[in-house]
Length: 220
Image (cartoon, rainbow, N blue to C red; front, side):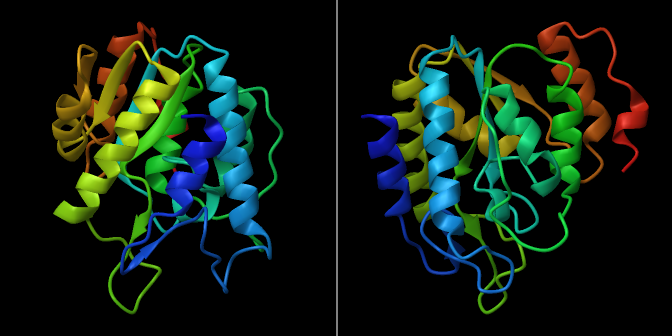
């Protein structure tokens, strides 16, 4: 498996009521060539990861309509796409048009990431954006069939970039991480949504030995 083959494989995944940012174009928010831009960025990040000693894959649940649906990058919204690319030494342009949209989960995740120097790859259990029927700008939890497809993709990602460990953000992620980990260490931390941001920050700080993450960064 190469980065190009990996991106081609994920672009071919299709489920009902799920937006694939590497193949689908949002008629409302996307630039004309948005799927190509998102695919190219993911491929470049994978290529950069292959040249790094990746500390961990941070695993979330699935892409959100205010975040990864737009950027094609897990746990990353419009506001943080340039910072995400810069961690891998890459330039970035937004594949969406109009004003940049912020996502609360992404803001908390990135308040922590900006205090950590180690190479970290961001991913999800289900790497597409699942939404409610007839309403693409909603979020729903992925189903069992989607989870199985996502786990196969995540397993391929682990083989490709060979991280030192997996860090599962939330219960859905830890179940998947444990199933595909092989001999890798799996660490679980609280998901920052639904009142969990303080615990998430504390656990992530402890994992990486970060002395302090300014609380002002979380006031969004």
